[in-house]
Image 1 (cartoon, rainbow, N blue to C red):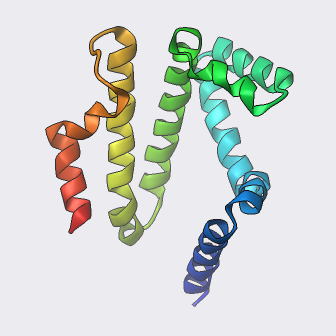
Image 2: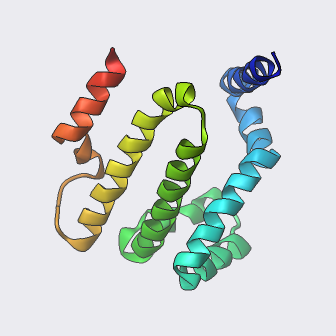
Length: 152
């Protein structure tokens, strides 16, 4: 009963975010669960590459407006940073998926697999092995198979 109650609480939180996105996003970002997730990802980034962690710290301290984030869109400037951060997020998602119950894993695992395929496509583009768009991985056989399974 307590587990079903927790599921309902989580579902209500998701509905609340969808209902009023502007206000809810700030509240969501300030929640303990999200801050703990950010912390776990940043620890993974630091373990992989302390230099990238320092760059993130510099961005955080010099942040003034949303326009400041535009530099992160420039892959020649921030590409290495994105590689490390996406790898850390991918590792955290894989770990979190391994820790959840089988019934929930059935619904979440395909999205984690798609994210992992996207990260590998990003690495391929960064190495110069592909000139395709980042979302081109969705056209590969494995991604198409996962999407078709989700469609049923």
